[in-house]
Image 1: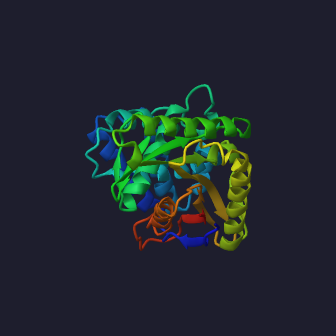
Image 2 (image 1 turned 180 degrees about the horizontal axis):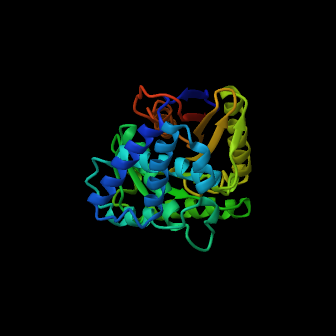
Image 3 (image 1 turned 90 degrees about the horizontal axis):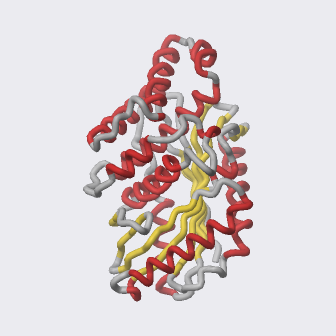
Amino acid sequence: MIGEQTTREIPRHSYAAQLSDFENACNWLSSFGVTVNPTRLGGYRRILADLVAKFSEGKVDELLKKYGFPALANALFESAELIDIHRGLMESDQNIAQSLQKFAAGCPLLIDECRTGNNVGRNIGFELDTAAAFVRCGFKMELAPPADVWIKTGGIAIAVECKRPFSYDALGANIKKAFSQLRARYSAHATPAHVRGIALLSASKMENDGSLMLKADNNDDLAATIRLLSEQFVARTRPFWNDTKDDRTIGFAVSLRAPSYVEDINLFTVVRHLTWVGLARTSGDQELFRRLAKAHMKLDASLEKDDDTRSGLNREHSLL
């Protein structure tokens, strides 16, 4: 069943507002014992502070000469992830200090990340971002290994396995591994009849190794581009839809997050597109999956800002 697509624009905010939100998130990390300054996150904070200062003086060109556009874009793009994580998990009483330590580690630039090393930080980031999004949608969440994330709703425990493949050659193996891990979660659960699972796949690294930026003439053009990329990715997953080998796996979602530039309003933005693919067999499980998807479609992904010049976009698509 194919559901409706919804598109919503996040209110714009300034570089100064992004720096303020990022500072709050970094302070939150420090409260868990994470020493931010020596990490990639400390580098992003310094770049954002320089950007705020130079932008107010009309001297962004000086900053481009100092850092280069890839480093500036990377800092804006990746700082947004920590801001989202902080908003979702700031009240968490989970023991997440170790995960936050790992998240802060790794190479500063996405383009320097490789499959055989320096990828743990961003992999953990994808899991934390997933957990934060569910919390912001109103679900009860647990970070209880070995599952990446547990969601509880209506007496059902939902295991979420997150995969972040680096290439399309690895896509099938990642999907099969996620389904296998979900089956293991069902078997180990205290009440197997009351547990379900979904796999969450990130298409971001496969579509952009860190060297690319989506460019669009306007918002409609950007929406069409990101939608097409997501639909093409989902089409590549179709051969594996019947590999769940357990009806308790009720579906999966595909996340695509990318830095973007909108020409007509001279706007650097972060676009995020989430596609939900339902695999549930029973009406009850189908309704459960719809509830998860629809909650994310209504997610208020940014606090209202009165400042000017910057924004992000959040776009979600549902294949229920």
